[in-house]
Image 1 (tube, one colour):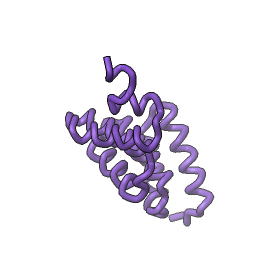
Image 2: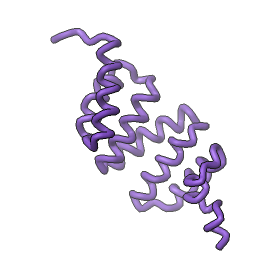
Image 3: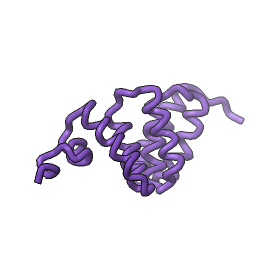
Length: 124
């Protein structure tokens, strides 16, 4: 079996980004599994794999990965937002609301505020 190098992992990560953009989340997951096995601390790879799991409707796996990011980067607004979307899609609105609000508090982007019901639509 050929030895993999750090360069191979970078290439696999970039290829996984392209696969996800091309709507092939399962292909992205396959590439990212080896990257994360070699670099379990890589938050970027984990976040990309979480997004791929979500896109592939593998919600438990997406939740696990997004939760890992939130646990290690509690100030990552996108991870909270994505975790909330995962909970929402899994039919767990109370958990979703909590993370939507955390995302909005960390980064008041309009879509985060709207999802958290802090936007102008919430007052109507």
